[in-house]
Image 1: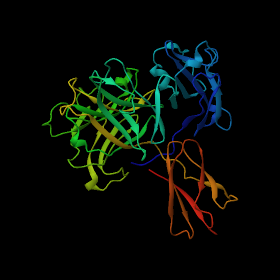
Image 2: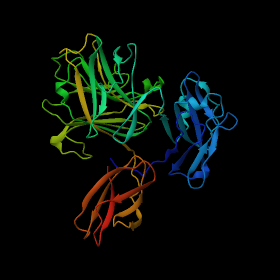
Image 3: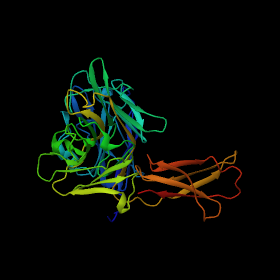
Image 4: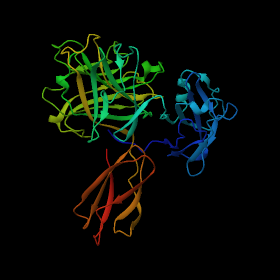
Amino acid sequence: MTKAAAAPAIILTNLPPYGSSADVGGLVLGVASDAYRVAVFIYVPGYGWVSKPTCAQPLSVIQSNGSWTADITTGGSDTNATRIAALLVSTNYNLPCVDGAAFLPTNVFAQAVTSAVVTRTNPGARFLSFSGYDWWVKTSSEPVGPGTNYFSNSTNNVWVDGQGWLHLRITHRSGLWQCAEIISARTFGYGSYRFELASPVNDLDPNAVLGLFTWSDDPAYADREIDLECSRWGNPADPNNSQYVVQPYYLTNHLLRYAVPAGLTNSALVFAWQSNQVSFQSQRGSFSPNPAQPNLITNWTYTLAAPQTGDENVRLNLWLNNTNGPASSNEVEVVIKSFQFVPLGAPPPARLHNLNRLPNGQAHFNFDAQPDWRYLVQASTNLGDWLDLGTVLATSPMVDFLDSNSAGCSQRYFRAITLQ
């Protein structure tokens, strides 16, 4: 696939904590600031989505350096907002004010060049960090979907180990089977979604389902649900153990069943979401942007009407499609090594600057970056042999880097390589 120039982006650089009356703020990248505005919305539980700062002033100006701010606490309960959405729109945006809507209207997202939707850490949920992103852990005191299950936010069901790997576990406690799910605190939009597993898919209990997918509570576009699912759906004799789905699954050419080979402990399951198609791929071992043919399990491209991005999250869950529990009657666990998101397009090459040596001899520098891209930082003493120093996930347009091993080196060169 030929990569285009880096797409416009909007990021939140100042997200007020839950309960705060401070302004939200951020940066816009890749567009002429005077031709665009930022439309901000907040979601207040029990009331709905609301335009901010006010209906009379629904748009925020973007400064020449790309920065913007918005007052999001102009109403009585605004400090209790759990979600904040910032949409990059043209200056002629004139859609009606949003006041108490259960979902942000699809025509609002259709007007946006790009958007960012974030769930704030709040006292009502357990949050954790996995693969460089924040997630909240689902819990329910009554059976809920998928599969009419109980979900637990206990550390017995969901935890991240010392290697940074995520563990999802179906447990049996107090006479109930309890499932596991985490939900990303932000949206990601169009791009490549990559999940690396450290568990054998073929050994998964036939009554269990591992789901790696996007989901929106807004029913538009079938909840914007795109699925990588591993399950035999209660049939242990099914030779296939996985599937790609663009919902609704029951429509023709919306689903492809396939098998992750037996004995394969490590695999990478991927989908690339574009506005006009969704491409799926499964690989042996760790993800590669250009896998060797023996490492490619299968692939599939969905070319019917693709869902359009909106306020969806990424969700990772392990649940039961049989209320009687696992077929083995044993608890079920899956380990997910990593999640990566890579936007569409290609960012400009990283440019290093402000290189200096600290009093302790260590080298410090920063480099220009594109948010959500990963960069491999390397060092060399001769410009021929390069040593990997680490991989960095960019969360802002500028990345600071400290080489803690450079003390004592009389000469050292550095570079940052954009990873695909």
